[in-house]
Length: 403
Image (cartoon, rainbow, N blue to C red; front, side):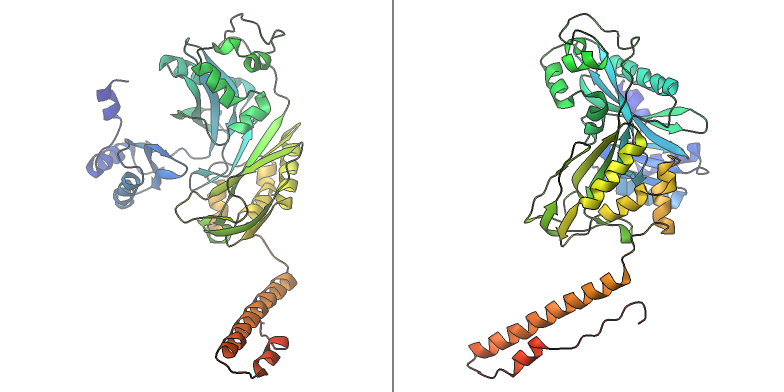
């Protein structure tokens, strides 16, 4: 894309953003998006000029030096993406894709594949468009072409090409059985995509190690018979709108199974500091269909144990997976933000558990304080043991739900 054409599509100042917004109109809302942003950073929604001016400056500060685009908000949309790989020989393959519609503040929570919400013919059009784009710009390596899809109309709209391997790429590996980092290395070695064994297997070639050319735009890959759903494990407090938390981690207990695989980027005696990204784990559950994968993920989340000073979203994710909207796949990109606003989903704890836990905590704190006072008196040469009585027997008052 010529530089002057690219510059015409971007806004470099608040004044240019205001002018562009007036052309677009505020009726349906406007998205401010930094092209080099990601993970919820460098993106804001506005519906009036006052908010636009403030939000534009925030986006500038979050992704310094990045070109910034303004675009009309696409409502009732699903976030679907196509996993592509381009090679040095002008080939581009689409390895199916992912549905990443469950988001809060434009950051993904669940990712799943294949994207069953889109008809197969429609998603194949999205794949071919992604392949043509990859070829036209000469892109080499793994990347993601992202779309907004309206399930009511069946129309889709290009969002962006993400030129990297995304953190949710194991979803695609689970449904295609193609190792994406290994594929990237082979592409970097100059090997054509149609000579990579796992891609040949994905396209149903009997000879995985053959050298015959595959026309990726015309030939179809094998039907996918697996569904994978992923959940991001974050150090956030869902009771406060997913506010990030920080602190030490004493214990992480999780055991991968044949149906669920996961990883954690922090171990026991580690921690999440306030400047780190809140995600510290990722789970991937598979099944013969979407419902089986969902149930496997629910069971895995219920068995996770994270102890420490941080709050996690684990229990809240289970509640989301059990909602009728998620089960029936009727969600869109604004679904979770709506739930958080209305507080229609919450994690309830039994009253007796809350009261007993509070009593144990207060008792522990009391014993520690009294013990420290007795020890301090001994160091001062005071031999009175009257304080010990208050350690062994004491009363507590717990106030809960106005009782």
